[in-house]
Amino acid sequence: MADTFTLKVIARIKSDFMQKFGIPRQSSLGGGQLSTVVFEPEYRDANALRGIEGYSHLWLIWGFSMVERQGWRPTVKPPRLGGNTRMGVFATRSPYRPNPIGLSSVKLVSVENRPGLGHVLTVEGADLMDGTPIYDIKPYLSFTDSHPEARDGFAGEKLEKNLQVAFPEELLIALPADKREALLSALSQDPRPAYQQDGEQYGFEFSGFDVRFSVDGDTLTVFDVAPAGSQKLK
Image (cartoon, rainbow, N blue to C red):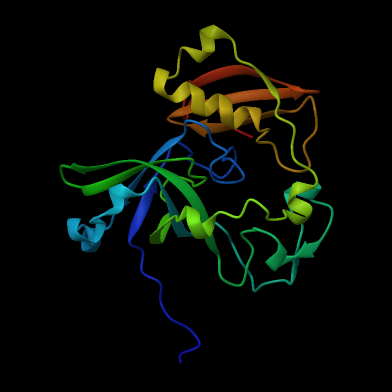
């Protein structure tokens, strides 16, 4: 058996998150966040999706396309532990792995045929940046993939507390109505890096808008929303 083989990109995700900053840290945490799976021309065969509408959830197998790697290390610093404690790479979901492959469970919302794109999948809860390559899609099976008795290790020991989001109405209405819930959810999960400090200003691009905010204690306050590219983000 060969030691290596080539993965083929079968699709790419179309997401409102244009950069790594701000993306929910795990799939299904982005409440209301819809994304589209657009297949590469070679794989736009409707027969490949036959029966998929019978499933409520899917597994997406994808690549950390924006991770710059120089070899690999046996330990990493998970954000869950503040970015200061090293844990074994195989005990984490860090993108810095021997093979930069990610796995996400998402809810299947719809399957539809779009002109010029073939059949596309609309999914909810994807923790993927716009353009992320997808290598495979598999159905989520509740009778074998769900384990209510499972232990979460250190990842479950320090669950982040959701922030209160203060989003002035005059800024919120600048966003399309169908994008507001997803953005509020992402902000409430505290998108700042592990070395976060209160009082500093942060920002990220979401659905064509640059969103700027700061955090004081348990409250995140949005102070500016503008069309993407009109201001410099940190």
